Image 1 (cartoon, helix red, strand yellow):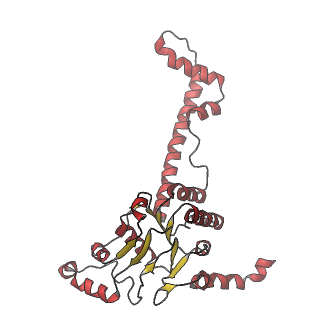
Image 2 (cartoon, rainbow, N blue to C red):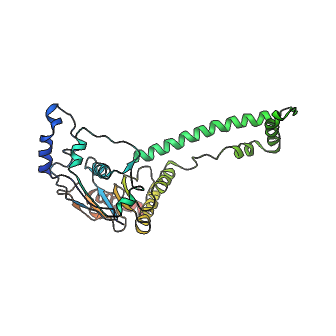
Length: 292
């Protein structure tokens, strides 16, 4: 499914004109004019998007910048803020996004998901788990007090205490606690919890901009995420634009890959990307060790 058909940035000549025409630039001196200059001397063609489009390049190549511009241009929901200068809105006005008719109904499900979102989710789980541990300790103390209490009911006001005492005397401590407090929210590793975050957040009929989703994921979980994204695009009418270095995600079936390190920026087969060739060279150098 395609909701975003095409996205384009201002040309280098247009960017130069805009930067010098910006009243903010004339008023004072800024150390950052982001995103002006990010793609200097690297012409960016209009990005023609497929159900799965991948942006690949080294640090500082502009992968995240493009995702941020797309998300802001389309008004997509996002969990965490990102760095921007006072020039960002001025630059954004010159970007062009061509959407398909179905985008209007898909907007509600669509969103930007970054590694910061995953990190915040993991922190929230940890905080919840700490609170559960505190509650568990309180219940254990309550159980001990009720288990060995010398108690006699004198009025209906004592009914809740009586029920507590009877409940404690019938159960073991672990059973008493387990029946009154939820199990640990965190029973999985950070990687497994991060993978669960993606399966929870990605719903049917949506456009999702994913910024390096492989962070926190083991190679095995990266492969599982790859399969999940492929199925979501193929069967559940999702579209993905992904920035990544992961060879597992880069090898997704029918993904269209833009190499942001090339001059000019162009599409490329995943096996021809520079860092994939670096992996390949490394494994060839250690071939005998791997085969023993």
